Image 1 (cartoon, rainbow, N blue to C red):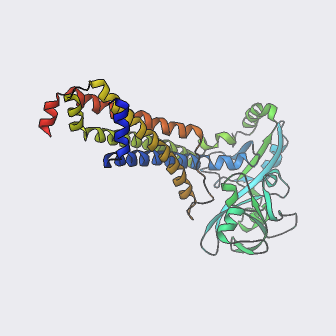
Image 2 (image 1 turned 90 degrees about the horizontal axis):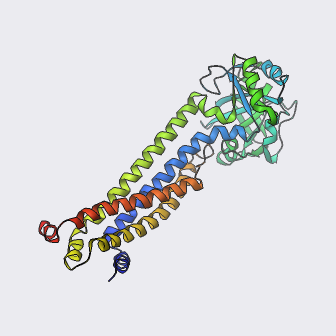
Image 3 (image 1 turned 30 degrees about the vertical axis):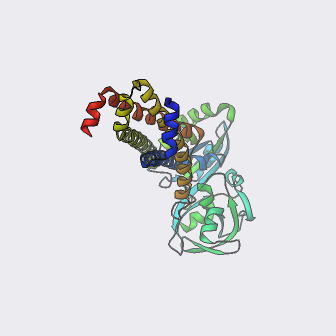
Length: 369
């Protein structure tokens, strides 16, 4: 009997220890994929919403705690629009409010006709027009969850709005917002002449130079490229730290669980290994047989764990309290990393106890059982 045939025979039996090892690795890999995917989803949610609106840079109050707490005068947008390299501006007012059912929603308001409206795809109805008054457009995900349709009435800031359109957006967060015209929201929130930020579109050929000139010309403002926003605001920094922390903990936990699982499975077979050694099997053949078993178990568990983790992340983001705000970011790199962790640590957890067990005299092992 060769090392390969012995390994395949042991695998075909599906001993409880094999099932336990498979389940342990699968759960560890699934947790790794799901946690890292969700953490990255949280981190990228805001930035992707801004980028998908066509916003190249965002202007806020210097030192603002977050995007919503920023306060700018609306005429700042006019001054920025006159600067070289700035091709379009969109003053924005973002506020939170509560619906009649107690559900909290974010309301984003822009002047009618500015470029962010172009990023919204109307699925039913229309976008607000000049002079419409108190009308709102609702993201499709929010409308589906809350049961809104065109023609319905929605209460925002203790005032009834008519729903004139449903829209979808490229970003997950964008599909869960309420949109309205800027002057209407300013009046209802007592923010006349004020905005929370100004979105900029820049000349692509000189965007870096334009950003530098804007920062020099407006030192009292915070002007950041949308790609750098996660490093500029408190909640973005928190999201980045949490993503790094969760990713590190998930990786270390997966490594520990996989190593312990495989080591335990091998140690449980010390008596079998001692018998093989006693009947003349060389040490390298015994270790090779165990490595084949470990590789097959780790590969199968790794693939199943990746599938389970991706599915689990989707289930979590489908929960009523989470859906529409984040989407897991699970790309090919993460999948390859998870599979390599499963294989590498699984083999390491196999070879170390195997070498220790085969280094002892068979009689000593059998005597200690």
